[in-house]
Image (cartoon, rainbow over all chains, first blue to last red; front, side, top):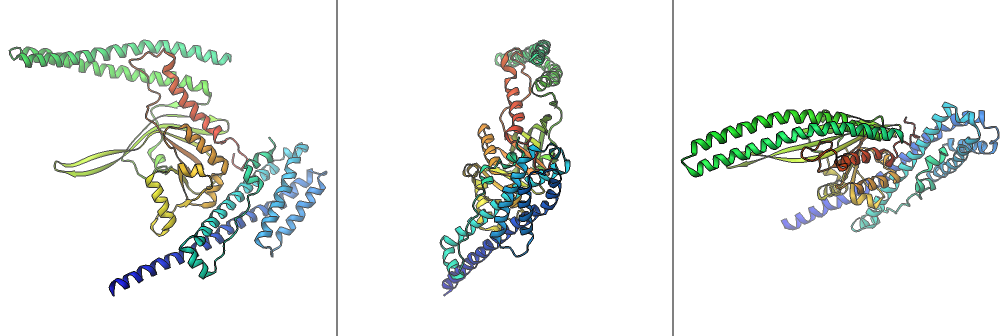
Length: 185
Length: 321
């Protein structure tokens, strides 16, 4: 009788442990996404300033600038899904990269201290987003492993937990020298 | 090129001068050893022959006292010689690598800095550090020092308590200004049985890990084989340890005989290299003039200097100058 009670107690504690750890891992994924979100916001906030500074010098890059302004307007709208935000960020990244590459043609802009600060803050935000994405992927992998492996898989089935897709690496993350490319040196 | 030849020529002059000083030290030390050995032999003969015990004791004792005087004399001369070697030879060699490099041989990494670097969790009970070399490589300020840190354990034996000393680190601690801003702490430790178990516990049973630092699971397989990473901030750890930085740290680790430890704290990167040899010490019984005498010292300085470019710390594009 006592032995049976002990076995049940142990199983119960074990079960609670797995249940809690699954919930913890799922929350961790949400938490990791909010880190990306915070970084994205920081990056979008840089845009008005960047656009203002660049506009004064880059008369011949109208198309690129218009695209950045449009994307910025989209990014400001509050009803965006996570995927949309990430997609916007990707587009913004490549547009701004296009702008930065063309800076070579504008010596005055290249010498502007305000622009240089913005440029390095932009690169900093790029690396921070890359880091946040990697942290997110790591916690997603952790969560996926937990719900797909035994005995977590049993609980996950009951709790209706589904695997989450990891974020595809952007070209920049794969190369990881994007910052240098941006500066074109 | 002309400058290099000039440095080489002035170094040769210094070495020639110091060689004379070295010979003096070596002569006195040799004499001291001879007197010591002679004294011991005389006493031994006296004891063996019995009848000559007093004569043996007196002559042997006199010989040993002479050797003690000679030893103390040589130690004074050796200190002067050592001082000259570090101030002139090592300093000149450093300038040949980079004009900004300097040596403060009496000073090293402060014990408080060693503890604050959090490279090692064990606090030292005995700490020595010397031969601090510092300067700039491009835009990055750096320094490195020889460090010997130990901790003590005590065991109860029949004859009372017995102390045991264990080495935390004997080697060099390198410190440089990091090229990115960060606020938290990230530590990269060698993966051994203990740290692997610790990592497993903090991953599977986080309740049992009391530390504020979390295990960081990184993507680089090679890196994970060699190291375990903890950080106060998961995102910041990845901001610092980019895929490129992880590869660079692996390369640096491959060049070092024992696995390195790395910590990122307070805007600095600290790297501990466990090493057997004492560097920047002048030879006594070997000539200063052989080409090899300075090779090891030179190569360790070059190695430390190259870390800045290997870790790409001069790329300052992330808003930190």
